Amino acid sequence: GQQVMQIPQYQHVQEGEDFTTYCNSSTTLSNIQWYKQRPGGHPVFLIQLVKSGEVKKQKRLTFQFGEAKKNSSLHITATQTTDVGTYFCAGSNTGNQFYFGTGTSLTVIP
Amino acid sequence: EPEVTQTPSHQVTQMGQEVILRCVPISNHLYFYWYRQILGQKVEFLVSFYNNEISEKSEIFDDQFSVERPDGSNFTLKIRSTKLEDSAMYFCASGTRSSYNEQFFGPGTRLTVL
Image (tube, rainbow over all chains, first blue to last red; front, side):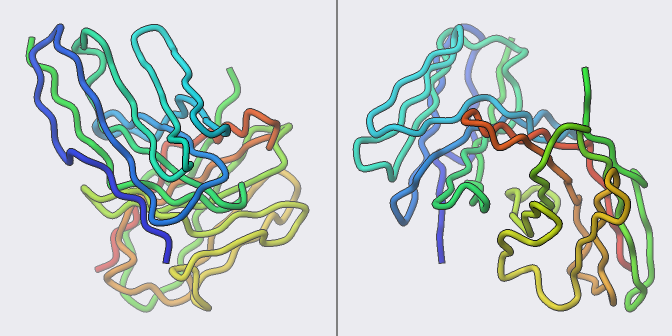
């Protein structure tokens, strides 16, 4: 079945350093979403990417969808302690069923 | 700001018992979802629901699971005969299925099966 893997599983960074998480799907996706989940919280939608090679920015966050639509990345520039949480990608082929990645847990050390 | 609500926040049940988890999606949303997350693991898709019927379901969503939108506001997940491995956080989500396709998640119900 569909598998979506993320690396790394855990990342510890000093505040101010950059952070990147990578998402890889076993199959081609129609779209990919990114979510952030704070400890003890629920997933919160960040963005959706649809087009091959698409790049979107939200302040310090940059999202990219691969040309083959099988991989994606999230890059955070100059991390802050408020960035702490687990970042999940979620891919879909149909728009009705989303396969969440394994998640990357980010710890920011002040 | 409108939000998805879920009740109860925590449900403890004995193995073999039936549980119903309740969700109130955002009022103008048309697409509804149930996910589960075993502690420390990834979020797993269970089912999507639109126009009073299931759109898609995962392998996890077997005959023990059912969903219903009984009254136009609530969206429920029923587990007929709970197993120990059903212990997890269950999230409801809703969306408008606009081109933005954002899903709004509720706070979750923690189900503990003893």
